[in-house]
Image 1 (cartoon, rainbow, N blue to C red):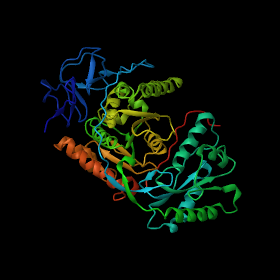
Image 2 (cartoon, helix red, strand yellow):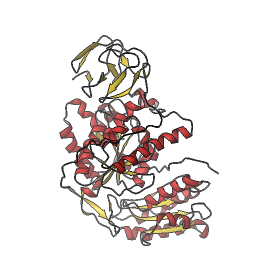
Image 3 (spheres, rainbow, N blue to C red):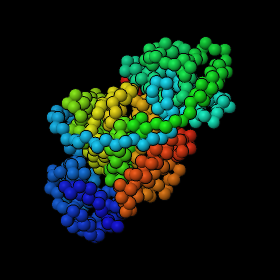
Image 4 (tube, rainbow, N blue to C red):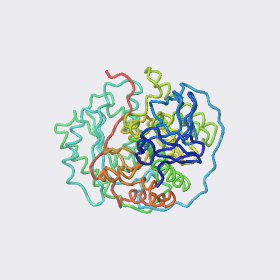
Length: 494
């Protein structure tokens, strides 16, 4: 096994594949160097001398500049690298993409809904309009379990702290997020639970939700009921009977909407797990399916790659607005645009936000960008879409579900036990994590560092995702009962 990995022939750094000791020799891309210090696995070592102010090149692109002269064989990290990110930028559209060769979609058994959407689960959801009734929703969930049938995959209540004491866009975001979940095809039926006096009361929520099927969606105002739990349980009983009418039937993979997310990344994420998702994205979009890439701050420094893959200048302009709009969000709060990566990212070998971003966008493969979505907007364009949401794992994963993702593919180098409102597949970037946390990790992409080919592992991963979509497999998060709902907040709380 090699000791280091050079991702791109242009790179002047290589990634350590194991913990390396000072004095060891490394070779990559025709360069040879003797290590001047220990280099942890996932971290970078210089392949050649880099002058102060010179670019640190990884993935074939600069990930920052040398804050001092760096000698060949030195450990390259936060102590000798600084970001090259600026603030708001102007961009030029330089199309650089190829349309994928169309592929016939494989089929999987899914649930066809009356509105034409396809779900991969048949669940009954209880969604509060306001955090004040979270405990009531949970009690209704517990007391309704007796109504489960073999045709249902579960009854679940979601909690959140919002829906009242919010102003302007914050309240709108809450309404958009809840409306997206109420419409979600993984829910065969939904009980919308209100307190009654909140800003986001039933009548206001209905304005955002739009047309709905009264057999599928029921509303309950707790203040109007003598016994709100009994009334809620009675409503869920009716909803379970309705949802139990649905059966799985053959659906094309072109009906899949897949969310792409990474969290707790390490130095291997951009080499193994994220490129594996990129291969999946290429395949699912080639057969007419949809993938959604989010975490806008983790596009900073790699945004031109995505911009030049936009299918049209109109999509390009929306992408520019997406990037600069999120930078302005940072600036409005007097925060540094390069505040990411996290301490865990740095411990895993990620040095700058550009380093993280260039690894992050690997999840989008080489697919052309078809659309750009604002937070809470439902996906409409087939192919690869970009979604406005932050990097926070819970907020961005929820945002993917809200926009229509039936499942989320989540890569990680550090590990996390959380789950989103939809099945969340955890893909480890390294085999050590997969061995240490088998209760968290669903698929090990670290095998790519152990001799398995991308082609072979991609085929296996594609089949694995379809088995999750078909209900043959449960994710580890689902087995643990982990389901989180987090709404994007930005503003005053009254």
